[in-house]
Image (cartoon, rainbow, N blue to C red; front, side, top):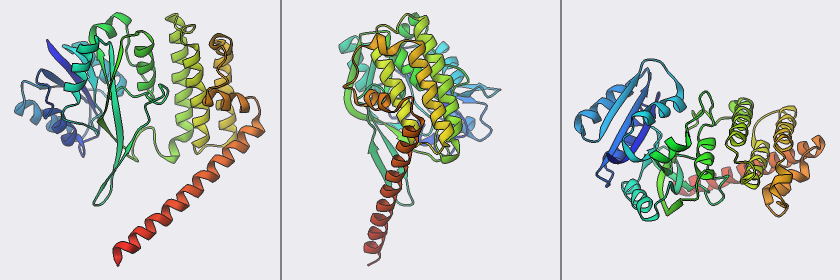
Length: 334
């Protein structure tokens, strides 16, 4: 048995895959298996992964799927054959610090944890530089990634925790469910995972805004139904209410029509009412996200005015950023 199984789903990422797999080949935790799932990728990803399997046969193995099934099913398939005591996930365009899995596995053993998390940062590559930004993970509704976590394999099996199929926002329900179902949680307070900000990402880009809202509705409806089936709503009503409020407020930043925005707020209201989250959560009025959501819910004019305010603030910040960039360019030219 391995200490950790690292699952890497791969589709159309030949530009970044070698960098990702390099970071896993350099992991200081020795007893690790890396399962690379080639999700019917039409490029050279299978050949790249094959080189690592040849060069590091004790660490790398690959699964080649003939039909594209998506990241959720690719991860689920790999989980079925994983042999590690713990399971981690790395996206094929990201990379891990060399000591990431050693530190997290050590913390898992010391704490006897079912789920261990670490800090993470995003990065963007420019012509001659790389720009990094730490990602917020203090609030649980900000920490919706699975790639900055380790999960005890037998725990996932016993709780029947898998990724939802045919859902873009697949990390969030998996991460929530795994944390809600146990009190054995631990954290490594170091930045160990690097998340690439790519304009080609499924969840990013102006043109994806409206479709992202539809996908979020599908994910949230399925997640709440799953929480009810597991009997977990009473114990986690406050967290679920905060989660929904955060999603409603996040929609203000999407490039969508006022009708779509108001419709999404109405959808969130529907879930809050259906699962009686306000009654079950008790007094959450002091929580910033919840209080803002409650202030604007049910009033289309106020929601639309708030969205205009948010967009104006975004435009102002973009204008200031462009001025700063122009000044830096001018100084560099001198």
